[in-house]
Image 1 (cartoon, one colour):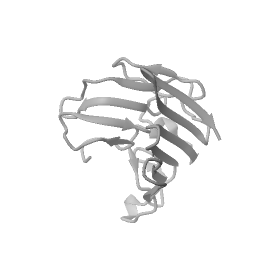
Image 2 (cartoon, rainbow, N blue to C red):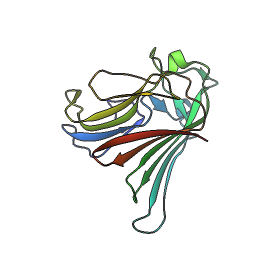
Image 3 (tube, one colour):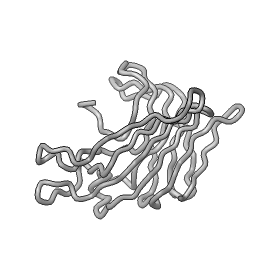
Length: 179
């Protein structure tokens, strides 16, 4: 959206009420933006048979809007993949590889990104009105935050970390893989 930083997916364009997959909340930008050139593609694919499909959305070498620029190219970058699994409803966030020399600029003075799910968010008022699940603290063993206090994962997140949000009985379970 032209009024909000990247690093998230919304379930609709209804700004009064939408679900959010916050896969890496910081202002991401194409590294070639200053050159009016695309060098950080966003690609997607859908694989598998009905009932077992996997949708993958990948940000390749995404730059950081507030990061440093050298010769009109954003220097720091990150690769992020989101996978949605139809069979079990799992949501995966794959981090890395990346090159991040200036996290204090890239994360606008915060300790790192926010990764999580928001059931219902009002963009107009900036209010969370539904359930939320946010990962915070140690990226290898994060706390799961379910109240409205904003929180962040500490940078650096080990490269090739995968956060998996999956449904379990009457709650949510989060697992972390390090590939």
